[in-house]
Image (cartoon, one colour):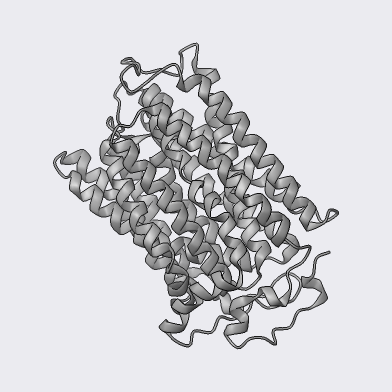
Length: 439
């Protein structure tokens, strides 16, 4: 149900984003809205974990989902009334607050429910369902615009996305209370205590002070949505017409389902290997994908600039299209592998949902800061090549900085001393059964 909540809301948002410029002919309004969205997301992401701990996951999810409907509605409004561009920016800022709440609750549940041996599989399953939302949304966009020769989507596409996102607002109301959940090995998910708002905000600093290795993941977090701007706006929207953009969007999100499943189940959850071995294997695979894809993309990027981008966009019947669409497929694989591996690393640091909510807040906050920066850069019409090279450098740096953390912090099983928030919440005596220990 958590997966389908994100299927309906962030999934539709991703389908819209993947069209390049949210399906508009010009990407400028979308860049400004995205910058506003991720700016508020970056700020509130650092505190959303504490809000989640106090309100509970179900209420936090409900509060987080409605912003996606407002954001989609703003694009419908501007399609009808072109002068309402400021509405998109305001809706983006509001969505940033809502999204920080949704992803904090999502991260805490996804990483806390499984046993240590199942975390890769759970993350992979969630990521597959979530990205299926973008697949369905992009197929709707592709089908509804198949015969269109325009450079932007029609009102029907936005209406379809809006209806689906509104359904997602109500799904969390039917979810079971997380306090009653029992893991597959018979252990209960620890209940989070919330003494006061002051205590919850102090927990942000406490988690960072007691587990400083998380700092080495900050570059990886910052880069984790940075590459979307070049991929969707400066490649997909710059080179292809709306029909080809829709197909590119569809295959990219479809590839994410396979990417998350592959690295989650076949690499990170192979119990016959030590967890440290799997951590290094995941690092090698993701790092290899980073360099293969960006070397490939460089040879495309050097053929066009903002000034020389083709006036006649590439369609699906263009002879060069098949080679170009494969790059979108591999970008989808890299994206899902990157996100799955990042969540798996955080899950390897703790089993406590309170601490995981804080870590997820750090992740989404820094991720959003990166996205806000690059969106604003794109809105200022910085050369495509500059944005591409900055993307390549950041994702490479993210993996390089993560390596010492993998070596020094990832253990073959999570120990009680790693459950920082359990200790400060007065739950030091949480039972640790042999079934929770992986070795």
